[in-house]
Length: 153
Image (cartoon, rainbow, N blue to C red):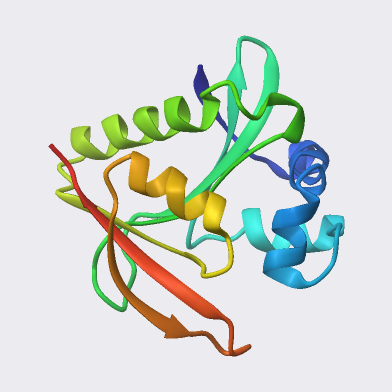
């Protein structure tokens, strides 16, 4: 497994991966599918690093992160999403391990993330990877966001 940069030319692949996850899209945006414009705004911005998760030559997911959040100067993992066809095989945990290894190489001491409060499956996933709950806040849309942090070994 390895990462490959998402480019303007490959955004359509990211769209397919994101749109395979209807439940996440409903949690996040209230709709089952996103548009190519939505994906471009999310994955083609200078603030975050957006990569595909690849298994050999197959695109199985996307990962998006911010090296330094200006609000707290910490790295934030924005998203790990595995295409619905490849879920349940441990690929998300493996992708996170690759990401964590990369962060350790860069000297990062801890990683933070936020997730929608109603996404219980995600909360279990992050807890299983050693993330600890920090706090809960409401976002601009009055949705509950749970914040987690992991100190890297």
